[in-house]
Image (cartoon, rainbow, N blue to C red):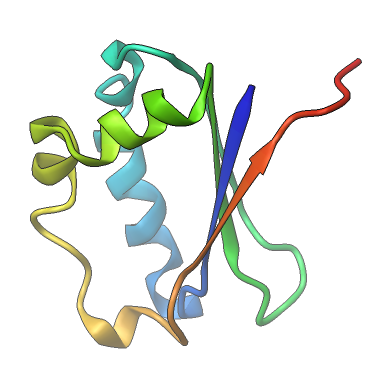
Length: 99
């Protein structure tokens, strides 16, 4: 399994809109070949980023998603710059142990 963590620092004033954007897109990523699951984690600590975890069968499946037309469509109307307190950070991981 291949897991991508996208850490997105969202301004408190924009958190509801950020979450609503993901709610509106629920199901779009599910049809991608190799997609396993997605979790959106809301920060509990002030100033911490949201974390979007996506799990894929392998790196090739993730790469196919980010180069797909569906990916482009899902990112064509981003929130304004003031909605974020910094730049997102993407981490990519290979699962070595799972229980």
